[in-house]
Length: 296
Image 1 (cartoon, rainbow, N blue to C red):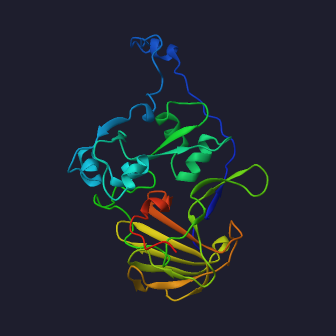
Image 2: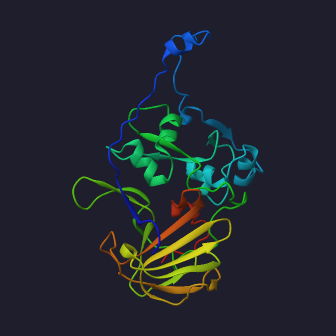
Image 3: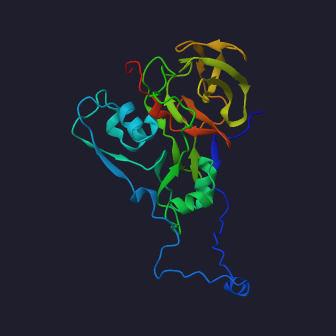
């Protein structure tokens, strides 16, 4: 069985405590007591308050700008949607973070532990990097969704998982639950398509899983270079076997309704993941759709 589920449910409420240092022990040891400056912040300023602005000049590319600031191109693409255009918009200003990561809107009622579990990052790290805010709101997630081993010139998958650009029935990220007021984390995108529509390999690689897998239904998993992985779920049939190597655009299966789809319309549940120390962490697949066929 594969580890991990498509949807991560909210975790339990967790309290965060700051431990104080007993000054009496320091005094008795013979060392001078530390002098704390009045009004000195206990946490660093939030990462999102330290964003720089870069004005694009002629001849620059996403890759060259990312290299200039020692960032991955994916980081700039996620933070600056205007960079998804076919040509880099000369004269426009873009935001530059101090290090790789993504910016998200936390769902109402979410805790730091909820966010950490969804993105595979320590809640303590998130708490500190976001200025020790009591509750998460607009949050910077450091390093997640992008692997430090990724190719510097990587700008997206070389293909698309369907023969046409499909409407998105359910996006990646926090989504309202169909039952009650609980919010769920959707780790992929649901691409609307009729049952039987061919499903294509979005990138060349090795098929590492084929079969029935819980809520995913019939699932195909392909591992790609640079510790990247794609998943294709709710299939009606498969055309590949485990251990098989496929090329971009190869027909690997067909759209179906197996498993427990999150929406009623027939669709392909598609995921892009990166291998980090905590395992295969889901990314926003839309950011990778830079090489696409024509719309249906």
